[in-house]
Length: 120
Image 1 (tube, rainbow, N blue to C red):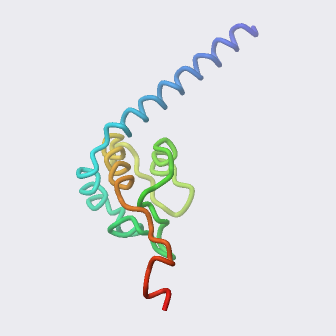
Image 2: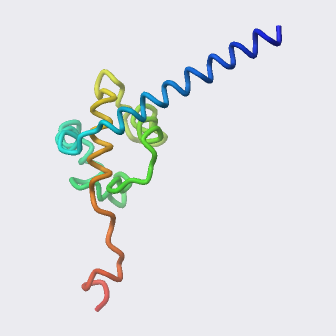
Image 3: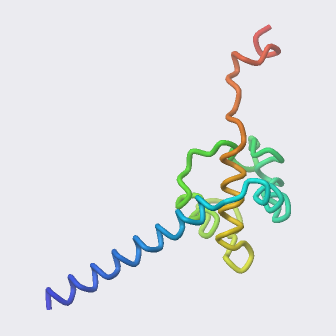
């Protein structure tokens, strides 16, 4: 009985690793230009800003995200907040990878000390 449980657990772990590897493959294959178009088409900009800058009340900053792709995809599919879920029928894994590539291509936020108006 223990051997069967071990085999089932091992099979589950191998399947999870395979899914993670496929997700990482999509992230590596993302196209930032296509991602920018998709970001605008599905409405991400409405809460996260046209350049992923985020807003105080709407959605967090996404530009130059530090989230790993797997966490980004998980948030898209099963959001942990008021964000609507983007199921694969609405946003494919390839499109998600493109959006991720677009967000990674955006510059990081400026430091407040580098903004002259804030230092007058």
